[in-house]
Image (tube, rainbow, N blue to C red; front, side, top):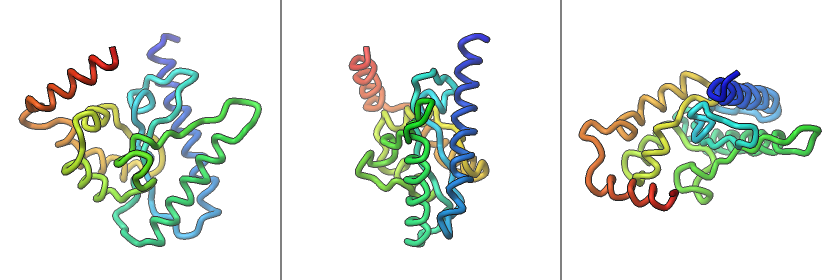
Length: 176
């Protein structure tokens, strides 16, 4: 197969693996709300390679219950541990560092909380990263609701302003 088909196939394999892990671990954690794993980077762009990790963040339904947040976080931690544990094949690393507020932010946020963050606080690079966001695993309807909710951030009606263009050029120069 060609490289594009390989990237898409590996992305689908990543999604299936995470879906299976979510199902396997869900029975161990009571009162888990609906979750969606939003794929970013090469996973979201369907361009994974054999060494790719799974850049993502996790969206839960709009319940603000502390118990629901705690259960969702417990589930995500267990899934990450399960998939990265030693075995005959390399583990699958789910990298959640691109979530709002990075490593210091909540591991799981509600759909409404994510959308509010991106509408109010997202920097230019965060909005750019959302261009490759897509459904990764978990509840597909929740993913689609979230993705529709952030479309104004990803595709601003008035385009990118002068400050945003400057930030994009700086980021591009740093990457080059």
